[in-house]
Amino acid sequence: MSSWVRAHTNIALIKYWGKENEELIIPMNHSLSLTLDAFYTDTKVLFDDSLNQDELVLDGVLQGHESLKKVQVVLNRVREMAGISSHARVESINHVPTAAGLASSASGLAALAGAASHAAGLSLSEKDLSRLARIGSGSASRSIYGGFAEWIKGYDDKTSFAVPVDDADWDIGMLFIVVNDAKKDVSSREGMRRTVETSPFYDGWLQTVDGDLTNMKEAISKRDVYTVGEIAERSALKMHATTLGAIPPFTYWSAESMKAMDAVRQLRKKGYAVHFTMDAGPNVKLICKASELAELKRLLSEHFDTSRLIEARPGPGLHVLTR
Ligand code: ADP
Ligand code: DP6
Image 1: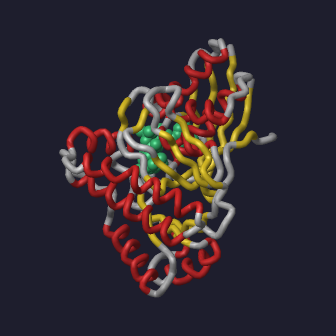
Image 2 (image 1 turned 30 degrees about the vertical axis):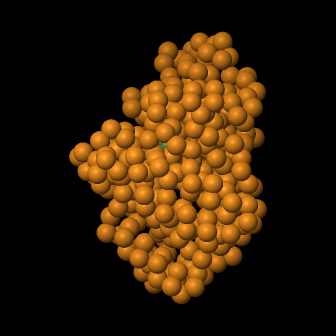
Image 3 (image 1 turned 30 degrees about the horizontal axis):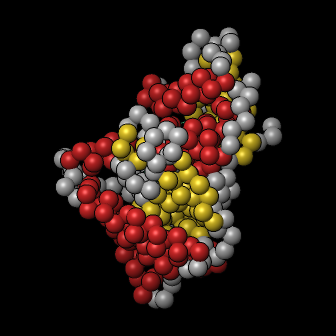
Protein backbone atom coordinates (compact mmCIF):
# COMPACT_ATOMS: atom_id res chain seq x y z
CA MET A 1 0.00 0.00 0.00
CA SER A 2 2.73 2.50 -0.93
CA SER A 3 3.63 4.54 -4.01
CA TRP A 4 6.07 7.27 -5.13
CA VAL A 5 4.84 9.80 -7.67
CA ARG A 6 6.40 12.87 -9.33
CA ALA A 7 4.45 15.95 -10.43
CA HIS A 8 5.86 19.12 -11.98
CA THR A 9 4.76 22.65 -11.20
CA ASN A 10 2.73 24.66 -13.64
CA ILE A 11 2.59 28.41 -14.11
CA ALA A 12 -0.70 29.93 -15.18
CA LEU A 13 -0.77 32.09 -18.30
CA ILE A 14 -4.44 32.84 -17.67
CA LYS A 15 -4.69 32.99 -13.89
CA TYR A 16 -7.10 31.19 -11.56
CA TRP A 17 -8.10 33.87 -9.09
CA GLY A 18 -11.13 33.39 -6.86
CA LYS A 19 -13.36 30.53 -5.71
CA GLU A 20 -17.07 30.04 -6.25
CA ASN A 21 -17.05 27.15 -3.77
CA GLU A 22 -14.30 27.22 -1.13
CA GLU A 23 -14.82 23.69 0.14
CA LEU A 24 -14.76 21.90 -3.22
CA ILE A 25 -12.43 24.48 -4.82
CA ILE A 26 -14.66 25.35 -7.74
CA PRO A 27 -13.08 28.46 -9.30
CA MET A 28 -14.74 31.66 -10.48
CA ASN A 29 -12.97 31.50 -13.85
CA HIS A 30 -11.34 29.11 -16.32
CA SER A 31 -7.52 29.14 -16.32
CA LEU A 32 -4.69 27.89 -18.52
CA SER A 33 -1.11 26.96 -17.65
CA LEU A 34 2.21 25.56 -18.82
CA THR A 35 3.75 22.67 -16.88
CA LEU A 36 7.52 23.09 -16.45
CA ASP A 37 10.51 20.77 -16.19
CA ALA A 38 12.57 22.79 -13.67
CA PHE A 39 10.43 22.48 -10.52
CA TYR A 40 8.71 19.38 -9.19
CA THR A 41 7.62 17.40 -6.14
CA ASP A 42 8.21 13.73 -5.30
CA THR A 43 5.68 12.28 -2.89
CA LYS A 44 5.40 8.88 -1.27
CA VAL A 45 2.20 7.72 0.41
CA LEU A 46 1.97 4.68 2.63
CA PHE A 47 -1.36 3.51 4.06
CA ASP A 48 -0.57 1.59 7.22
CA ASP A 49 -2.99 0.05 9.76
CA SER A 50 -0.45 0.49 12.54
CA LEU A 51 -0.53 4.31 12.31
CA ASN A 52 -2.94 6.07 14.66
CA GLN A 53 -3.00 9.35 12.73
CA ASP A 54 -2.08 10.82 9.33
CA GLU A 55 1.41 12.31 9.05
CA LEU A 56 2.96 14.71 6.55
CA VAL A 57 6.74 14.97 6.40
CA LEU A 58 7.79 17.70 3.98
CA ASP A 59 11.50 18.02 3.16
CA GLY A 60 12.27 15.94 6.25
CA VAL A 61 10.21 18.08 8.64
CA LEU A 62 7.01 16.87 10.29
CA GLN A 63 4.29 19.38 9.31
CA GLY A 64 1.67 20.98 11.54
CA HIS A 65 -2.09 21.18 11.35
CA GLU A 66 -2.44 23.77 8.56
CA SER A 67 -0.53 21.84 5.87
CA LEU A 68 -1.83 18.48 7.07
CA LYS A 69 -5.42 19.71 6.71
CA LYS A 70 -5.04 20.25 2.93
CA VAL A 71 -3.43 16.85 2.56
CA GLN A 72 -6.20 15.16 4.54
CA VAL A 73 -8.83 16.50 2.17
CA VAL A 74 -7.20 14.39 -0.54
CA LEU A 75 -6.47 11.40 1.72
CA ASN A 76 -10.07 11.31 2.98
CA ARG A 77 -11.45 11.32 -0.54
CA VAL A 78 -9.10 8.49 -1.53
CA ARG A 79 -10.07 6.42 1.54
CA GLU A 80 -13.73 6.95 0.69
CA MET A 81 -13.22 5.88 -2.94
CA ALA A 82 -11.09 2.85 -2.05
CA GLY A 83 -13.20 1.80 0.94
CA ILE A 84 -10.24 1.79 3.35
CA SER A 85 -9.81 3.36 6.77
CA SER A 86 -6.04 3.17 7.42
CA HIS A 87 -4.09 6.30 8.26
CA ALA A 88 -1.33 7.43 5.92
CA ARG A 89 2.26 8.53 6.15
CA VAL A 90 3.02 11.10 3.43
CA GLU A 91 6.66 11.89 2.69
CA SER A 92 7.31 14.64 0.20
CA ILE A 93 10.33 16.37 -1.25
CA ASN A 94 9.79 19.72 -2.94
CA HIS A 95 12.32 20.49 -5.67
CA VAL A 96 10.77 23.95 -5.56
CA PRO A 97 10.72 26.54 -2.75
CA THR A 98 7.58 26.08 -0.60
CA ALA A 99 4.93 28.83 -0.41
CA ALA A 100 7.02 31.40 -2.29
CA GLY A 101 4.79 31.93 -5.31
CA LEU A 102 6.63 29.27 -7.29
CA ALA A 103 3.64 26.90 -7.31
CA SER A 104 4.69 24.30 -4.74
CA SER A 105 1.02 23.71 -3.97
CA ALA A 106 0.41 22.74 -7.61
CA SER A 107 3.14 20.10 -7.82
CA GLY A 108 2.72 19.10 -4.15
CA LEU A 109 -0.97 18.37 -4.22
CA ALA A 110 -0.90 16.81 -7.70
CA ALA A 111 1.87 14.41 -6.60
CA LEU A 112 -0.17 13.61 -3.49
CA ALA A 113 -3.29 12.85 -5.53
CA GLY A 114 -1.28 10.50 -7.73
CA ALA A 115 0.58 8.75 -4.90
CA ALA A 116 -2.40 8.40 -2.55
CA SER A 117 -4.74 7.01 -5.20
CA HIS A 118 -2.07 4.62 -6.51
CA ALA A 119 -1.12 3.45 -3.01
CA ALA A 120 -4.79 2.75 -2.26
CA GLY A 121 -4.98 0.53 -5.33
CA LEU A 122 -7.16 2.90 -7.35
CA SER A 123 -6.50 3.34 -11.03
CA LEU A 124 -7.96 6.75 -11.80
CA SER A 125 -8.36 8.42 -15.19
CA GLU A 126 -6.49 11.69 -15.74
CA LYS A 127 -9.76 13.54 -15.40
CA ASP A 128 -10.46 11.96 -12.01
CA LEU A 129 -6.88 12.58 -10.87
CA SER A 130 -7.34 16.22 -11.84
CA ARG A 131 -10.57 16.40 -9.77
CA LEU A 132 -8.81 14.78 -6.82
CA ALA A 133 -5.82 17.14 -7.01
CA ARG A 134 -8.21 20.11 -7.33
CA ILE A 135 -9.82 19.56 -3.92
CA GLY A 136 -6.30 19.81 -2.39
CA SER A 137 -5.26 22.94 -4.29
CA GLY A 138 -6.92 24.44 -7.36
CA SER A 139 -3.79 24.93 -9.46
CA ALA A 140 -2.81 21.28 -8.83
CA SER A 141 -5.66 20.18 -11.11
CA ARG A 142 -3.53 21.35 -14.08
CA SER A 143 -0.27 19.61 -13.02
CA ILE A 144 -1.67 16.21 -14.00
CA TYR A 145 -0.72 17.05 -17.60
CA GLY A 146 2.48 17.98 -19.36
CA GLY A 147 2.56 21.04 -21.63
CA PHE A 148 -0.41 23.41 -21.73
CA ALA A 149 -3.50 22.52 -19.69
CA GLU A 150 -6.82 24.27 -19.22
CA TRP A 151 -8.81 24.00 -16.01
CA ILE A 152 -12.45 24.14 -17.03
CA LYS A 153 -14.17 25.81 -14.13
CA GLY A 154 -17.35 23.71 -14.18
CA TYR A 155 -20.05 24.12 -11.57
CA ASP A 156 -19.62 21.18 -9.17
CA ASP A 157 -17.19 18.46 -8.14
CA LYS A 158 -17.80 16.34 -11.24
CA THR A 159 -17.59 19.11 -13.84
CA SER A 160 -14.53 21.06 -12.60
CA PHE A 161 -11.27 19.53 -13.90
CA ALA A 162 -8.34 20.24 -16.20
CA VAL A 163 -7.79 18.95 -19.73
CA PRO A 164 -4.66 18.89 -21.91
CA VAL A 165 -4.49 21.64 -24.57
CA ASP A 166 -1.16 21.24 -26.39
CA ASP A 167 2.03 19.28 -25.64
CA ALA A 168 4.15 22.48 -25.94
CA ASP A 169 6.67 20.58 -28.01
CA TRP A 170 7.77 23.80 -29.71
CA ASP A 171 9.96 26.81 -29.09
CA ILE A 172 8.59 28.12 -25.78
CA GLY A 173 10.17 28.35 -22.32
CA MET A 174 10.19 30.32 -19.10
CA LEU A 175 12.97 32.07 -17.24
CA PHE A 176 12.43 32.54 -13.51
CA ILE A 177 13.81 35.57 -11.73
CA VAL A 178 13.76 34.38 -8.13
CA VAL A 179 13.56 37.68 -6.32
CA ASN A 180 12.78 36.07 -2.96
CA ASP A 181 12.11 32.43 -2.13
CA ALA A 182 11.00 32.97 1.48
CA LYS A 183 7.46 32.04 2.58
CA LYS A 184 5.03 34.77 1.59
CA ASP A 185 2.86 36.76 4.00
CA VAL A 186 -0.47 36.33 2.22
CA SER A 187 -1.11 32.81 0.88
CA SER A 188 -2.85 32.52 -2.48
CA ARG A 189 -5.83 31.02 -0.66
CA GLU A 190 -6.17 34.02 1.67
CA GLY A 191 -5.29 36.51 -1.09
CA MET A 192 -7.98 35.37 -3.48
CA ARG A 193 -10.58 35.10 -0.71
CA ARG A 194 -9.94 38.65 0.43
CA THR A 195 -10.02 39.94 -3.13
CA VAL A 196 -13.31 38.24 -4.07
CA GLU A 197 -14.96 39.44 -0.86
CA THR A 198 -13.74 43.03 -0.77
CA SER A 199 -12.12 44.33 -3.97
CA PRO A 200 -14.29 46.52 -6.22
CA PHE A 201 -11.94 45.58 -9.09
CA TYR A 202 -12.79 41.88 -8.89
CA ASP A 203 -15.76 42.14 -11.29
CA GLY A 204 -13.49 43.81 -13.84
CA TRP A 205 -11.14 40.84 -13.60
CA LEU A 206 -13.93 38.37 -14.33
CA GLN A 207 -15.20 40.32 -17.33
CA THR A 208 -12.13 39.82 -19.49
CA VAL A 209 -10.98 36.29 -18.62
CA ASP A 210 -13.00 34.41 -21.24
CA GLY A 211 -11.85 36.68 -24.07
CA ASP A 212 -8.23 36.36 -22.97
CA LEU A 213 -8.58 32.57 -22.81
CA THR A 214 -9.99 32.32 -26.35
CA ASN A 215 -7.19 34.49 -27.72
CA MET A 216 -4.60 32.54 -25.72
CA LYS A 217 -5.72 29.19 -27.17
CA GLU A 218 -5.56 30.63 -30.67
CA ALA A 219 -2.03 31.95 -30.07
CA ILE A 220 -0.96 28.53 -28.71
CA SER A 221 -2.38 26.77 -31.76
CA LYS A 222 -0.33 29.12 -33.96
CA ARG A 223 2.77 28.59 -31.77
CA ASP A 224 2.98 32.37 -31.51
CA VAL A 225 5.16 32.91 -28.44
CA TYR A 226 4.94 36.72 -28.62
CA THR A 227 1.13 36.77 -28.44
CA VAL A 228 1.04 34.03 -25.78
CA GLY A 229 3.33 36.20 -23.64
CA GLU A 230 1.44 39.41 -24.38
CA ILE A 231 -1.91 37.95 -23.27
CA ALA A 232 -0.31 36.27 -20.23
CA GLU A 233 1.32 39.51 -19.10
CA ARG A 234 -1.96 41.40 -19.39
CA SER A 235 -3.82 38.66 -17.51
CA ALA A 236 -1.28 38.75 -14.67
CA LEU A 237 -1.38 42.54 -14.39
CA LYS A 238 -5.17 42.50 -14.19
CA MET A 239 -5.09 39.84 -11.49
CA HIS A 240 -2.54 41.76 -9.44
CA ALA A 241 -4.52 45.00 -9.83
CA THR A 242 -7.43 43.42 -7.92
CA THR A 243 -5.33 43.03 -4.76
CA LEU A 244 -4.80 46.79 -4.44
CA GLY A 245 -8.54 47.32 -4.06
CA ALA A 246 -8.95 44.69 -1.33
CA ILE A 247 -9.59 45.51 2.33
CA PRO A 248 -7.01 45.50 3.76
CA PRO A 249 -5.07 46.13 0.53
CA PHE A 250 -2.05 44.04 -0.31
CA THR A 251 0.37 43.36 -3.11
CA TYR A 252 2.72 40.50 -3.97
CA TRP A 253 5.10 42.90 -5.71
CA SER A 254 8.36 44.05 -4.22
CA ALA A 255 10.79 46.69 -5.49
CA GLU A 256 12.86 43.86 -7.01
CA SER A 257 9.79 42.52 -8.86
CA MET A 258 9.34 45.92 -10.47
CA LYS A 259 12.99 46.02 -11.40
CA ALA A 260 12.54 42.63 -13.08
CA MET A 261 9.42 43.78 -14.96
CA ASP A 262 11.31 46.81 -16.17
CA ALA A 263 14.20 44.63 -17.35
CA VAL A 264 11.70 42.58 -19.38
CA ARG A 265 10.33 45.73 -21.03
CA GLN A 266 13.88 46.77 -21.95
CA LEU A 267 14.55 43.35 -23.50
CA ARG A 268 11.38 43.68 -25.51
CA LYS A 269 12.55 47.06 -26.81
CA LYS A 270 15.70 45.31 -27.99
CA GLY A 271 13.51 42.99 -30.08
CA TYR A 272 13.18 39.86 -27.91
CA ALA A 273 9.80 38.13 -27.79
CA VAL A 274 9.63 38.22 -24.00
CA HIS A 275 6.88 39.02 -21.48
CA PHE A 276 6.37 38.36 -17.78
CA THR A 277 3.88 36.84 -15.43
CA MET A 278 3.67 36.76 -11.62
CA ASP A 279 1.75 34.69 -9.12
CA ALA A 280 1.04 35.01 -5.41
CA GLY A 281 4.60 36.05 -4.58
CA PRO A 282 7.30 38.52 -5.68
CA ASN A 283 9.02 36.25 -8.22
CA VAL A 284 8.86 37.12 -11.89
CA LYS A 285 8.56 34.53 -14.67
CA LEU A 286 9.50 35.38 -18.23
CA ILE A 287 7.69 33.78 -21.16
CA CYS A 288 10.04 33.51 -24.10
CA LYS A 289 11.44 31.29 -26.84
CA ALA A 290 13.20 28.24 -25.37
CA SER A 291 15.94 28.81 -27.95
CA GLU A 292 16.60 32.28 -26.45
CA LEU A 293 16.70 31.19 -22.78
CA ALA A 294 20.49 31.12 -22.52
CA GLU A 295 20.92 34.50 -24.19
CA LEU A 296 18.22 36.15 -22.06
CA LYS A 297 19.81 34.68 -18.94
CA ARG A 298 23.15 36.13 -19.94
CA LEU A 299 21.64 39.58 -20.55
CA LEU A 300 19.74 39.51 -17.26
CA SER A 301 22.79 38.42 -15.30
CA GLU A 302 24.01 42.03 -15.67
CA HIS A 303 21.19 43.00 -13.26
CA PHE A 304 20.47 39.85 -11.22
CA ASP A 305 22.68 37.24 -9.59
CA THR A 306 22.91 34.21 -11.91
CA SER A 307 21.95 31.88 -9.05
CA ARG A 308 18.55 33.62 -9.09
CA LEU A 309 17.92 33.00 -12.80
CA ILE A 310 16.42 29.59 -13.55
CA GLU A 311 15.67 28.27 -17.03
CA ALA A 312 12.56 26.16 -17.53
CA ARG A 313 11.17 24.28 -20.51
CA PRO A 314 7.83 22.52 -20.91
CA GLY A 315 7.63 19.60 -18.49
CA PRO A 316 5.84 16.24 -18.33
CA GLY A 317 2.63 15.20 -16.60
CA LEU A 318 2.23 13.17 -13.44
CA HIS A 319 4.13 9.88 -13.34
CA VAL A 320 4.82 7.02 -10.97
CA LEU A 321 8.48 6.66 -9.92
CA THR A 322 10.03 3.22 -9.83
CA ARG A 323 11.98 3.04 -6.60
P1 ADP B 1 2.98 28.28 -3.55
O1 ADP B 1 3.20 29.57 -4.24
O2 ADP B 1 4.27 27.63 -3.18
O3 ADP B 1 2.06 27.34 -4.29
P2 ADP B 1 0.80 28.43 -1.61
O4 ADP B 1 0.65 29.31 -0.40
O5 ADP B 1 -0.23 28.49 -2.66
O6 ADP B 1 2.27 28.69 -2.19
O7 ADP B 1 0.89 26.93 -1.13
C1 ADP B 1 1.86 26.49 -0.23
C2 ADP B 1 1.24 25.41 0.64
O8 ADP B 1 0.99 24.22 -0.14
C3 ADP B 1 2.16 24.93 1.75
O9 ADP B 1 2.09 25.76 2.89
C4 ADP B 1 1.59 23.55 2.02
O10 ADP B 1 0.40 23.63 2.79
C5 ADP B 1 1.19 23.08 0.64
N1 ADP B 1 2.25 22.26 0.04
C6 ADP B 1 3.33 22.68 -0.66
N2 ADP B 1 4.10 21.66 -1.04
C7 ADP B 1 3.51 20.54 -0.58
C8 ADP B 1 3.83 19.16 -0.66
N3 ADP B 1 4.89 18.73 -1.32
N4 ADP B 1 2.99 18.27 -0.09
C9 ADP B 1 1.88 18.71 0.57
N5 ADP B 1 1.52 19.99 0.68
C10 ADP B 1 2.33 20.92 0.12
C1 DP6 C 1 -1.95 33.10 -8.49
O1 DP6 C 1 -3.91 26.84 -6.40
O2 DP6 C 1 -2.32 27.83 -4.72
O3 DP6 C 1 -0.93 30.97 -8.71
O4 DP6 C 1 -6.70 26.54 -4.65
O5 DP6 C 1 -6.39 27.93 -2.60
O6 DP6 C 1 -4.82 26.06 -3.07
P1 DP6 C 1 -5.73 27.12 -3.66
O7 DP6 C 1 -4.79 28.15 -4.44
P2 DP6 C 1 -3.61 27.93 -5.47
O8 DP6 C 1 -3.67 29.34 -6.22
C2 DP6 C 1 -2.94 29.65 -7.35
C3 DP6 C 1 -3.10 31.08 -7.68
C4 DP6 C 1 -2.17 31.62 -8.76
C5 DP6 C 1 -2.79 31.50 -10.14
C6 DP6 C 1 -2.80 30.14 -10.80
O9 DP6 C 1 -1.95 29.29 -10.54
O10 DP6 C 1 -3.68 29.95 -11.65
